[in-house]
Each structure stands twice: as C-alpha cells, then as structure tokens.
Image: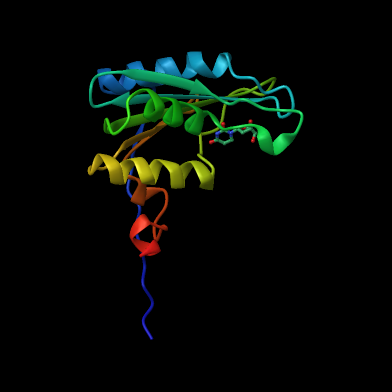
Length: 160
Ligand code: THU
C-alpha cells in the first residue's frame, strides 16, 4: 500500500493590473460577457473568454432555462461555440469571471466538474496545456493545464 499525494499549482495575482497584458484582455472580456449572461433562476452570472491558436477570441456566458438542466455554463457555451466555428483549432487559454448579483465582491470563478471535463478534451485536442485564468474581484488565479483542476480525469484513451 502506498499513499500518493498529487499537487496542483497556480499563480495568484492581486488584481487585473498585475496580469500580463494578454490575460488582462481575456479577463476584461470575460467580465463583460458575464454581464450579458442569462441567469434569472440562480442570479449568478458567469462569463468566459476563449483564446484560440488562430488568434480568434470567443466569449460566452451562462444560459439558464426554466427546465433547469437544459441550461449551460459559460465555459461550455464558449468552448462549444469555438469548436463549432473553428474545429480542431487549439484552445490556448480560457478566462472565467463571475458576478453574484447583489453580492459583491465576487468569489473566485470555479468551473464545475462538467466544464473541467470539457476543457480537458479540448486540451487533448490542442496537445498543449490550456492556460486557465480564474477571476475574482480581489485576486486572479492563473494555472497551466487542466491537471491543476481535474487530476485523475477520464480520457478518451480510457474508452479503448
Ligand atoms: N455556472 C457557470 O456558468 N460556470 C461555472 O463554472 C459554474 C456555474 C453557471 C451555471 C448556472 O447558470 C449558474 O452558474 C449557477 O450554477
């Protein structure tokens, strides 16, 4: 028997002005996208920006529905749109911001399990770690690769 410890790694920035310029742009766009989310049921707005290898920048936000499970998170809205428009073009980075209506400051954006799994699939397609930027009103976390959010994940190789 052996106890194994896995580590995750990220860099914490104290604000938007501390971020590298490229990341700053992605976060600013995610904040704008969050404002346009459709979240009448949860009151929790989320925005995501996806940077692609061809330079395209795609934004998305959460889309809720009266039939709750029919809604979709911001991350998957953006990633699926990106893949639909630019199939196989590598995803280089994703930035995620949240707005908790009537409750500021906002917490660090923490993608749900399903969104982590979807990010992982696009990371496999890209063949390189995706830069993941998790925004909040007082600090911003930047990590390199989905292993920092979803260790021991299910992969398409597992289907073989
Ligand atoms: N949501 C996202 O869009 N992304 C996340 O990472 C977590 C949750 C959305 C789904 C739903 O519209 C609302 O936030 C509350 O769960």
